[in-house]
Image 1 (cartoon, rainbow, N blue to C red):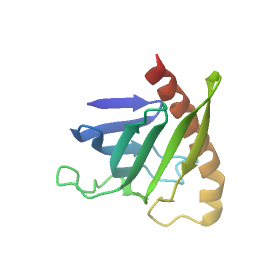
Image 2: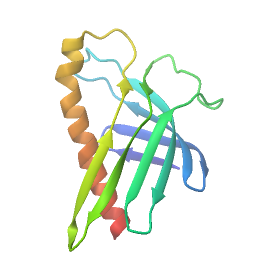
Image 3: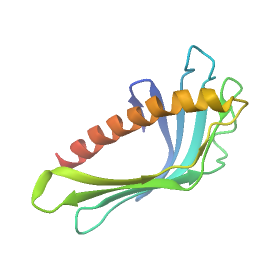
Amino acid sequence: MICYKEDTFMEFLEKRSAVSVCRTTTPSAFVRIISPREFVDVVLMKQYEDGTMLSAATNVEHPQCPPQPNFVRGLNYPCGCFCIPLPGEPDKTQLLSFFQTDLGGYLPQTVVDSFFPASIAGFYSNLTKAVKALKA
């Protein structure tokens, strides 16, 4: 399965029940100062009885996805998020997230600090859409 999120491309390399191996690519950014990136992660998706949704991931090597020459391989260290329903407020969700990402390559910290807030904002926008789609 392949899905697109705005300018991000995600390809599911393997899927077994609630566990998937995904390759995600992002285009160059910040006036091409940041080269295109790719990430390969094993992802666990789980929904608990109370409606809480968990997405947990970490980087992995996969035989179907060696590093590609036009991309810098980034790493997601153990990361994820919980989407927790708020009792009595069906249109609201509490979010607990934690990320440890190494963009790879040689980037000055000032460039990373300038780029990352917009990248994270885009992630939360996509997460909001995904949660709404799952609730529908």
